[in-house]
Image 1 (cartoon, rainbow, N blue to C red):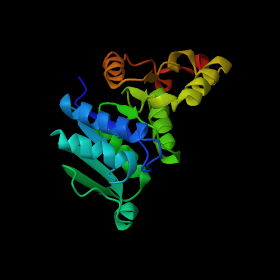
Image 2 (cartoon, helix red, strand yellow):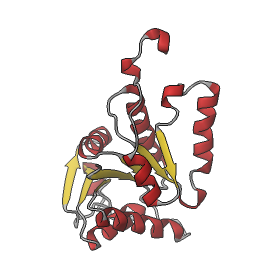
Image 3 (cartoon, rainbow, N blue to C red):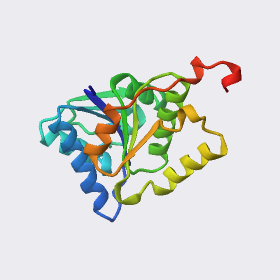
Length: 194
């Protein structure tokens, strides 16, 4: 059972309220299920919306934020726990160490970096945790199609093509993530399998 999930999402606030509303619903939904939210520690954008909603619903929120962003005054001081780390590498390692899986909401370059690293580490065998995308308002349609294209061309091995779990509603995504069965990792394979 998943007791904590890393939530990757943007620190921006897009004009369309569908994204902030969905972020709030995720924070509330995780707290309602007793799942700890582990996230980037920011108070702005979707990040802040997830954290605020989880906290308002009585949930536990663990923020992981680099020193430089604390200095920029974007840290969420209301988190249950706020871990200040030296850099992005330490931040992503802490996400992996403190969570039972990863949920990706809409975001930009930083969110993509975190998501692809979680998938890459799963392929390799650094973790065996589920990696999910909540495809809000079709935001990830092109990325999902590109992921399928990489598998079709052969750059994602057959054993790894289902690492990325996709749903449009949080209950569906959580159910799929709970049912996730880890695959054979690259570290477990021999050269002939690769």
